Image 1: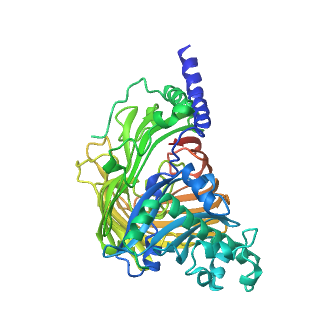
Image 2 (image 1 turned 90 degrees about the vertical axis):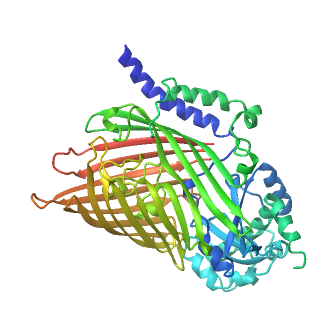
Image 3 (image 1 turned 180 degrees about the horizontal axis):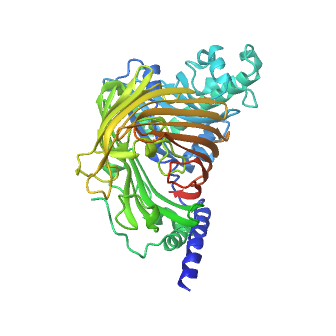
Amino acid sequence: MWHRHAFASRRLAPALVAATLLLAGDIAPVYAGAPYCSLRDPSHQIYDMYPTATGYRSVVREIDNETQVAVDKKIPFSLLKGELGQHTLYVPVDSGDPLGYIQIRSELTEWGLAEIVWALNIEREVVDFRFQRCRGQACKSVLEKGLQEMLEGLDQAALIALLDDQGQLPESLTETMNEDERMLASVVTRSAIKVIAVIESGWSTTVRELAQNNPDP
Amino acid sequence: MTTHAFPRIWTLGRLALLFTLALAQPANAQQFLPDSRSLFPAEWDENLRFAIDLSSRQLYSSATDNWHRVDFIGTDLHKVFTGKSGDIGTLTLQGYFTHIEDEEIRPGFFDGKWTYVYRIFNFNYALLPRGRMNLRVGHFEIPMGLEHTIDTNGTLRDYTHGRNIGVKADWGASLNGILDGAEYEVSITRGSGNSWETNGDPYIAAGRIGTPSYRNLVWGVSAMSGDIYVHNSGGQTIERQRVGADVQWYVNQYGLLGEISVGERDGDSTSTGLIELNRTANSGSWMAYAQLVYTTLNPDDSPRQDASTLFVGAKWDLTRWDFSLQVSHDLDSFDGNSENELYVAQARFRF
């Protein structure tokens, strides 16, 4: 009898756990994401894009539903549910003086998730970007066709103005690109628009603080 | 120092029921459940990530025709200390009450059915500007091979630390950082894994230098030397040395990974190799992999022996939980060991 009970509970416990996880999945308030030991700062890219930086400050904030609504009001496309949760904004500094903002955005591409490391100045204009993870042929070739130069120095309004009604870059701006490169360039441009909106909504205190310390851009 | 008896009442089934009841209250969930911003004092709250991590594994071994279960109840804390001139250091504390009912599969450092297992438990302090050198103190993974850049803690997928070194993570200190076009870590650790043991004076010295781990082509070289503590042996150690190389190549949704190492185990020459092909979904929601791992042992006074195992596995990531499956099949085994097929399933929930 005891053996039968032990056998049954051994089978029952995993089933109960699985049911718990399924039920709990949509109720628990905090999205914990991957184990934190797997978090990696984009240190190489920070010092590559800000060569005078001596260090960077991390500012962790939660991108929640409230931020999602605020972002939706600012830009013509939505944050995905998977983009919610805690994220880090990096503020590169030169001997304590802030130089701008760095943030990583994950974007869906034909070749899987691309991680784009964005560098913005204190006025939230694009300084540069790097692919931290991008696994298609177009990831390299699109850079050789001037995408970084196209986006450099643009603010959110100017970036939105680049896109057509479908959220794509028009052919007039992507004449030298093939179809894959054009698609990726549009993803990257939308990512730039999104990262500015997310930083302004999710890190508004940091944005105000840096703007006050830099009154004459 | 690491073992805690865990009350019998905390069986997995009861825990599952508790969490079901706790979570089935959406109206009060924000108040009822631990929130990273409310569990800690305000001065600790800044740049803090905190999660409760529950998982359970079910294993079936064809060699013994037995089912086994391993349960993990843990916390995962990550905090970045920052100042005007930049980040000062990062604290990572991952500890798990681990339950293994069946004695035959318990690691040597377990004193009973429940043991507190340290995974990553350290502080990484920024010594030099621009990330050039940090000092890590605590419990961390031995810097060697693929595992140095790919974190497999708490997953079924694994690399060769067990076969090569004998422990995956250890107590000690390391210097680590980034250079132009490179990442490195060198460490000196206790050589006894989860617990701090001094009997037999164990130690592990190890290091790896490689190209930046975010690239599509990553490679590195590693070396280790040490006397590794054998639990429940009265202070015996095993002498191990290895040098090795590892590579990762990612194209579209596919990854091709490999590592090889050669060295000695108590004076006998040995080598280990691993090759993995994996595929990740476009959305990142699942990944599947196949690994072939082989080990050779070439004793001075007996014929060479070979062992090889094929692993096939998959992992599904959902919002707060993931589910993994893995089957391993021994193609060849050392003399005296029976060839086995091991089926493992894991459910994991983090919030």
